[in-house]
Length: 64
Image 1: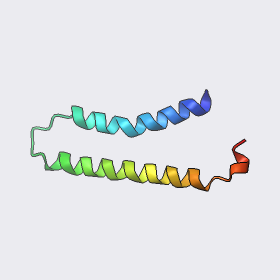
Image 2 (image 1 turned 180 degrees about the vertical axis):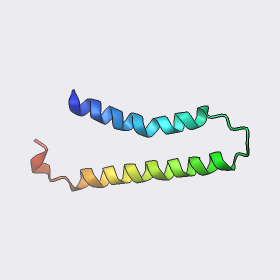
Image 3 (image 1 turned 45 degrees about the horizontal axis):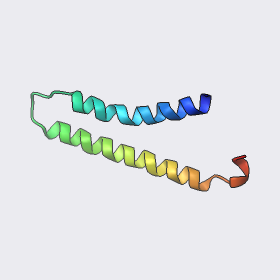
Image 4 (image 1 turned 45 degrees about the vertical axis):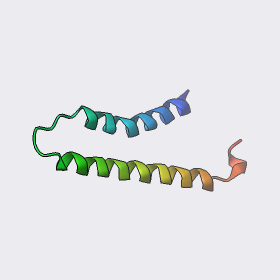
């Protein structure tokens, strides 16, 4: 359960900023919200890319 719980917490941590941004009601201009959206999208993309690179470079003999 430890590995599965850790994996779910990592996915949860990547999703929740987008949910919080959707719930955020800004009464000022929308430029700040757009900038945060771009930052979150870039951050998520980098996280996803690094995870793919990690799993592609893992030596298969260590998996089992």
